[in-house]
Amino acid sequence: MDSVADAHGGRIYTGFSDAGLLSFDPEATSNELASFNPDTGTRKAPALATDRRQAPGHGIIDGKLYVAGGWAPDGTLGTRTEIQDIAADSWTTGADLPAAYAGAGSAVLAGKLYLVGGCADACGTVDVSGYDPAADIWSAAAPYPEPSSWTFCAGLDGRLYRAGCATNAGGAF
Image (cartoon, rainbow, N blue to C red; front, top):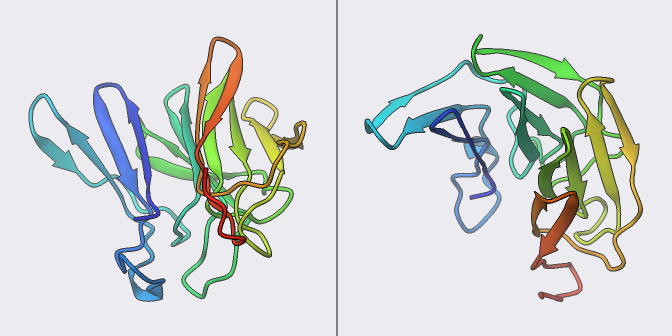
């Protein structure tokens, strides 16, 4: 629950979960990443990230997994961007998010990672941020027209799509 899942080079990468399942469990908040090859059934455990977190934004760009924000084990929101070079199996850090979020929708589009909505003071924001890995800069994009968090996003044919969400106000669509 609250983990990342991305695919690259025939492998699935997942991690940064809350194994508490139905409630926030700080002891279960993870900095672990696992990769799985569905063709061979093999698993491996890449190097650990620095930050334990859950519900971060994430995406793979040019062989690197970007993980940004999320809840720390103490329940605070983080702004750190960590980058795993998949081939080298090593982590570095990038520019911090301009504001702390967890539960944002995330997608890669045109070589940038985008975060849509998320939880800040409450769950459901209109904020959209884009990370340019070449410049190591986060910047604000046009706000989404309605508050959202726990949303699903995808980049396709030059457009960023968002589907479904929930907010603290109880809205789900």
